Length: 398
Image 1: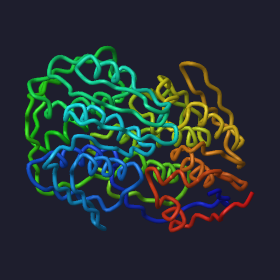
Image 2: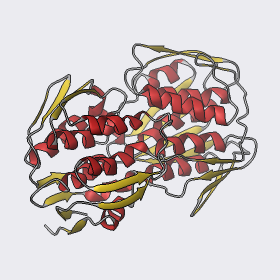
Image 3: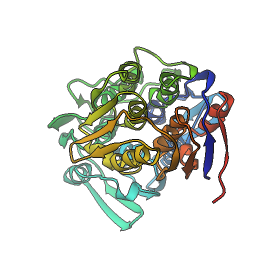
């Protein structure tokens, strides 16, 4: 689906959708609790549904209704299972260690760019600790064997999702397990989110040490909080002159992307922004910076491992819209020269599509977004909200 957007300011109130990062974690904890859990999560998306589908394949019964999910935990672990991850990196990286902890002969089915996204050093560490991992085809990964308890060592510099996956798996392993993280831990707030989710389900983690054979204890009902990473798009619209209010975001959230509340107003002057803990904010911060005083983003390496090479796709978006941007191995620099309009290829990256739509509110000429349907990954009703706020777009026929 390609869209053409006519520039106009937005006006109105948006309630933040539930955090998909938190939803993944809570669904996994609920699937291994001692009794059912009600998960309040009125909105879903393709990534959350991928995790739910994989947990169903592992034996959980998960029912969806308008208000969220009712999760009936796994009662009997299957000998084998096919897990449809679609293109969700979180789903794959969280559940690969979980399947290993359960000893399931699991085949993970991958789509989109997911087969190219890195699994090292998680792959090697799981093999060292008892599992055998293979690639039967380019789009499948097979996990056999069972993880042993002990000391796991993993770099913190590739993906915090590896750490989350191991932490979620540890209570399911017989015996105590310890995680030792080498180097700097990137995206540390996401690990904090994992620890808080586990705490909500009664699993205690001390210095990344977890006792084995622990039961996750259902809190009964749990609410997925509002998502700062997606709320940031409409917060940016406000920073760019629209009269938009975003509700449902907690100021005390463990989400690292709550930094948007300070960074967006701060772009009234040129900033140097460390992207290590906030890679998902870079597209919308870059758009805002281009319309303000510019910004230099540092520690950008992990952006190249997202749904697209997000360094290149952000740079291409800014240039396509009439702005100025350049990158090297360490930094992405966006000049505050303004944006005019143009054609943006979303490159199957939901955050590029949404950033381009918000950029249109500050442009003089139409903005065309190629492949706008990729917003289904995290925010299926983004364009419906955009139109409700007065945004003007129609299908673009090439």
